[in-house]
Image 1: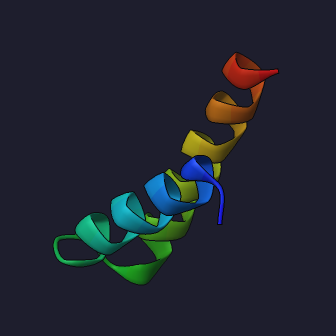
Image 2 (image 1 turned 120 degrees about the vertical axis):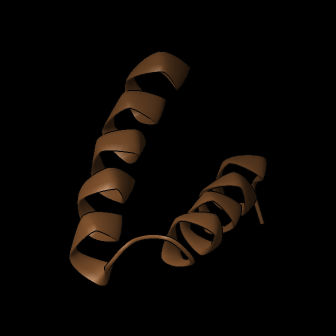
Length: 40
């Protein structure tokens, strides 16, 4: 498993504890888009 994948899972797990599922998906996708842009 890639480092990026592990990071995303950890972040999602943390956000899950304090946000609703809908909010989690919004944050997750926004972070993913930003992360991909900065990596590549």
